[in-house]
Image 1 (tube, rainbow, N blue to C red):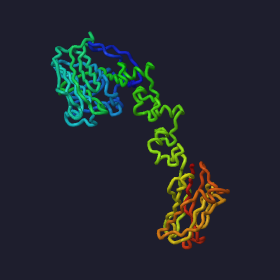
Image 2 (image 1 turned 180 degrees about the horizontal axis):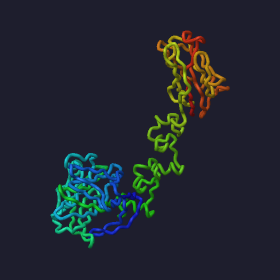
Image 3 (image 1 turned 120 degrees about the horizontal axis):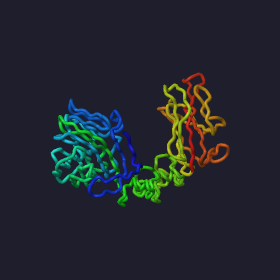
Image 4 (image 1 turned 180 degrees about the vertical axis):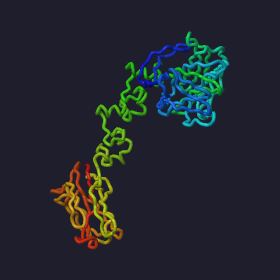
Length: 438
């Protein structure tokens, strides 16, 4: 068993009376392994006597044995061709192929409730039927195809608007029966397919299943995979779709290049690693993502992050420090907050350039000296909280050794009195690293 992906380019013989366009083999299984490949197939056995097993390079489907593709083998796009080589004994129902979008197949002999069903019967009829749901078919269609040879090719082609089923005589490669009908599928469907023997007490032999990707998004009459393989179309993000078809949804700056390919080439930035070009994010919502208006995402240049571990205090809590507002020198709106300290106690915020962890008082000093203290002293409220709005345009932030500049990271902490908390009578919150932006 093997899978050949959409990137594989094969030239195959047309098995119908009218010539078909070039086709790219997307998946093929000739059942040469002793076991059914669980990566390709789920075996569904609706009756207690049914069997599905590989034998001598073919798959034997006995008494309504079903073979359903696994979820990861979703069909390529909405335009694909399924071929199945099968043989059977006389008076047997030969084969049914169901293309569907439901994820469930169950019951004693249930078919999916959303999809398309193509059947070949030994009595000489060939049909296409709707299974309801999001599929719309004007009416079930069938035709009498006359005597069927022992070994046949069952052919289904679906392109999102037309379904075609054919029976091909393998010796002459002539179509001995063909029906088609127009239909519509919901976006994204079909997702999976089933091949099964429909009749109780009968046996069918499946020699090969092949699926060809016929997607042609640029409508040039050549499958997309062939365009890509030949170099006629570019696929820089290797998603199996020509870049020209992806531009409508994957080119946010509308420069004719796929965004992810610009990242790889280094011609566009994605500083927050969210898959979007930074300039597109800013253009969409500048008031939120680039509040200082300097053309750089705030999230990439203005950062606030806690560090260090605070010790418990007499409030029964651990004091923490946080901030609100953007740490922008131009906006000057940063506010520091302390929570979890004892109520109605003196405290103050302090800051310095580097991290530290030294036990001090009844807690830990998380900022390395020299320290810059922010006066006047504060008094925590009844819940043990305190706040200070920083004036980044005034001392000590605007000049001297405590001057803060864009791009620099400074560390902040809250010191507070705590006479009931321990021998030293004072303690600290954890630390807060703040990276300032313009």
